[in-house]
Length: 133
Image 1 (cartoon, one colour):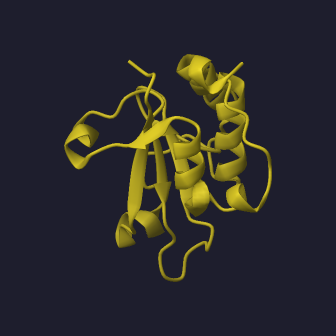
Image 2: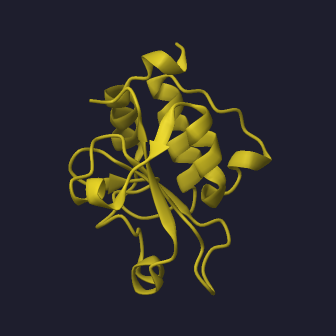
């Protein structure tokens, strides 16, 4: 399947089926595997070892940054790339919106994915696949 045929529903189904109740500290791997289930295969490598580095990779595969005004109502498949905060995981965080909640390697309470991110609110960008409706 090519990027043009990306299936957001398949990606979200995969992520929902594999998410845990609590973090396993493997958000980048889980989101990468969900993208692959939807048809966007991103080879493992330095560019995707850290969640914080996914922005350029997502753009290469047809995603575009969502404006702040569009974030009022996130869409299924929107993917947030969150930078690290002081004292937190150097990898940052990545999560995908499933239409009801944010999910990564676990089912999150909000986009932030944990108390450290929630408290520090580090820089982040949300990306939306351009073929999504």
